[in-house]
Image (tube, rainbow, N blue to C red):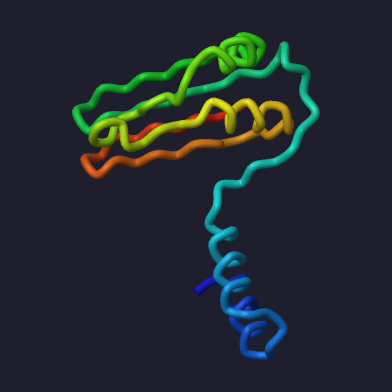
Length: 121
């Protein structure tokens, strides 16, 4: 167990936090690192990376300006999963862009090994 998890468990032992809060903190430790950055839209890209279990790889780089213009006109985007189970809400991507988030914002892994990742750079 890493040091951060042990610290959180000690805080539960000492009664400083409850188990629900500890669970949230431990979950946050494993979350992808996303950082805020003030970057001009003109320089930013939305990257979509798809790796299928069949060996098909797709890498798409789209300028953020274009993405912002298109997000309002599309519904939910489906990536793999049975009957479109795994969906990405364009509103969430739009909010991430507006918040100047940088890093991995979507990470989908299907049961048959397909992987879809969306990054803002």
